[in-house]
Image 1 (cartoon, helix red, strand yellow):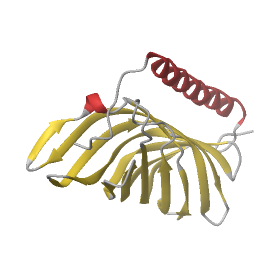
Image 2 (cartoon, rainbow, N blue to C red):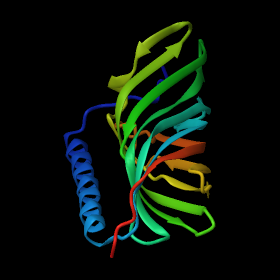
Image 3 (cartoon, rainbow, N blue to C red):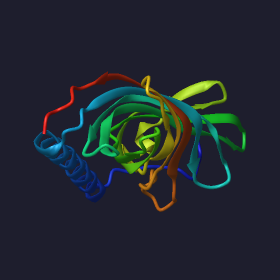
Length: 215
């Protein structure tokens, strides 16, 4: 495994991540309450899936690899063009690496994420979105020299990213776009800087749309 990447449990960091999760969950709850009280626009739900480029930034040994995500999102509009989008997804991230006596090493990370984003969509279908995405690590594997090793003890269990995206949604419910998610939390607790990055082509399909509410 990469020698310059090790993790330790930090109680202060653990309390900080719990605070972030509570804040985001509270924001989602407030958005739901405000939506139910004021919005005349119907909610919608869609499935999403994407594939692209994943990398851990930490030194020269890391190399990019294929990454992606799959999940579902719910759209809570506050007007004809603006909304809060949230949901759950599973992301597949990590990096390849090379070191002395190791060729084609690869760290695979799997997260469950809760994105909370503000979205703007023009009447013509063009959209942009941005927000925060906390995630919890559920699997970490280090593969090298033909063997696989558990890597969870070397990676922090919490990640916070900034999803930023843009694309186009068709009237039939299909959507296509680009989304990048740079991680802003350090994966390494020992002083070395290590951050996730995921950039992908994203496809979506709106499978449900609520009824128009009367003002």
